[in-house]
Length: 310
Image (cartoon, rainbow, N blue to C red; front, side, top):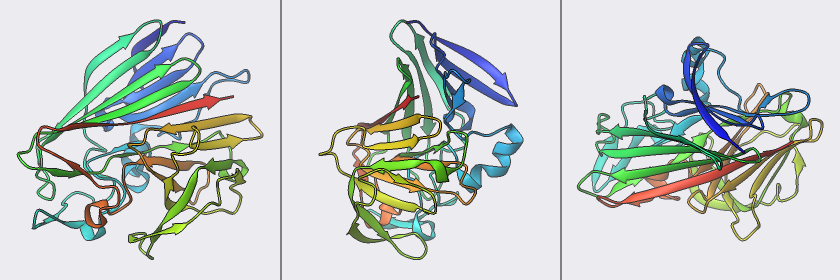
């Protein structure tokens, strides 16, 4: 098998496309927070993009802060209550949106692209210098997309602390998945025994509740979700599957243990579903649920793999 990489301009976007000679393609937009724009698989009836992407730059500009579709979430994900947290005895207040981090709209730099007989790989990097007063901790975020055979995409994030002190980190992704129809037709299954309890503002209370509803595949018709679940890594991978019985398409999620939280959100339009791999729960900077503490000079990696069958 041969893999390739090309640079495209489409609908106002500058895209890097990873491809294999079977027809699988991954599209990434570095200038928009290393955004995953497409994961396109070949099918007899025509290619299918399982990522609910933006139609144009105008579409992106009008919707990114409403949906955060496909955004890279760093140095925190989900919500920080009232944008305020305490760190090392100092109260910090995020000046940018207290939802989904600081890098979702920042331009990443391409530092590596390689394609051969086994895979196609790009590395994208952003050097955060502490420009938000609420997070004055410099660090580097590196995102790697790696397309492999059999419609398999590996996504890895590395963070390196450049600060002189330990810093708080929460990492994650916010992709929305679609098979072309309504979410109501899809079946969801994931391995979890516990759900994070939320209050009425979707802020964790600090408690976890027993939850096994989706250990067997369940149709999503009439189901509304905006919840965090703790994955059960004693179970075999994939730890989550999204299946379309009509289209005979299955999306598998294979997170590493660095992503113990699965966030699932069904938007009101119900044309796609957000399935997010996270290192911690919402408001982790305050409640500590899954909070990563990165020492000076320390680097950590978080990775997940998507595989599409169909």
